[in-house]
Image (cartoon, rainbow, N blue to C red; front, side, top):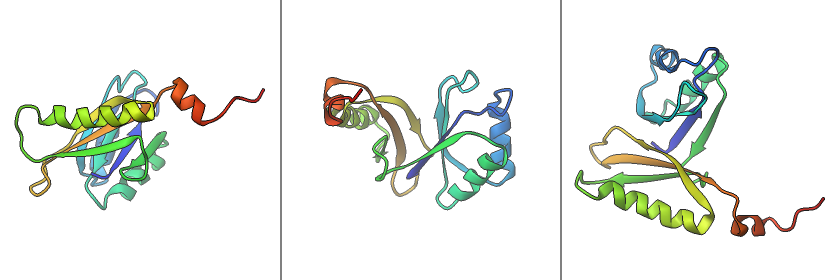
Length: 146
């Protein structure tokens, strides 16, 4: 669960069931999935079992899906929290930490993916955040030339 693949499930017409069928037929096992407006132009976000990333990407390429891959620890958009105990406030604690970090970096949460529980680590939570245009984020890039 250290990678997230994001795609618009449309080759024409939009069809998330078809995307999931193609992944299943290729033997790709999802470790988590989420998204919003997935058949209205939104992105479907999913994580696969470790070692199946290349197979999932091959399916997307074969069927000409547009997609993006984000890796935890490499791409600042993706944060991963592990909930060790399923109890009140656990998800809030994860999201509060991400929100605090986002406040410093000019990001906001786009969506949350809750994965399949792991016997050792707990419940994986992937939080996808995107940068917003603020005075702080635009100041880092310097004045525009034009």
